Every structure is written in structure tokens, then in C-alpha cells.
Image (cartoon, rainbow, N blue to C red; front, top):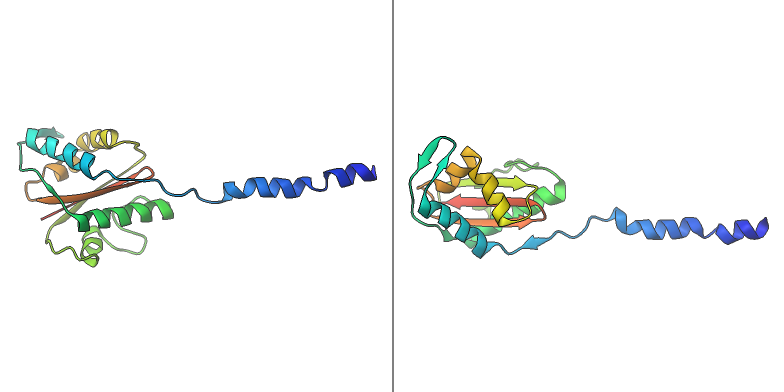
Length: 160
């Protein structure tokens, strides 16, 4: 009996060591989506589309803005790290506040967010099928954008 107890006394230690990796949050997966997202949004804008029941005629393509992309990445990272999904951060900052804090000098900012999608194609399909998100992408007042993806969190920032 003594040998049996001693033989298995290491078992709890092995279990703790084996389970420690499960306690850590996995590193966030961030994809560079600049080219793919900009191309998808501009294809939509150049073709025009129906958002909800409203026809949105073709509009000019957008240019990429690195400051808007940085704001999108920071917000996607924050939502992923803090497990929330909102345009307003737990600290109370809005999209315009986040972009201005990074030095964005435009005067018009809109944001699309999504969670649970694994590709630019799938998140774009969801945004096109949502009237408000679709209209944000088709807004003729926008001249530039930035976007980011962290794990399954997606953020688009539009500005002028």
C-alpha cells in the first residue's frame, strides 16, 4: 500500500503542469487585411448596392488611412482582450475619441464592428446584409478607411 501511494503522489503535480497552458489566454491572431478589405469595400462602393430596401448608387473609392487602421486595430485588440463587443469601450471612449487620440485630423468618423467571422469575405457579406453597416460602407461622405482583425473581432473605421 505504501508503494502505491508513493507511486501516485506525483499525479496531482503532473495534472497541474499539464493544465497550466489551458489557463493562459492564447495569443491573439492578427491578420493583415489592408489590401483585401480595401479592395472589397471599394468593389462594393464602385458597383453600388441595396442596403436594406434602399438603393445606394456607386460612389468614389476610398483610400487607406494608417491612423484609422491603428484605431481599428487598438479597438479590435481591446474587445478581444476584455471580452466585450461594443462601439464604446469599457473606459467610455467612442470611435471619434479613439481616432483623434491617435492623431486623426478628419472631422467625420463612422465605425463598423463584427464578431465571429473568420474571413474578409464572410464579414463583408454580414455587413452588406445589415442595412446600417452597409450604408456606412456606402456613405459618400467617407474618403478614407482603416480596418483590422484580431481573432474573430473585426473593425472598420471610416473618415473624411
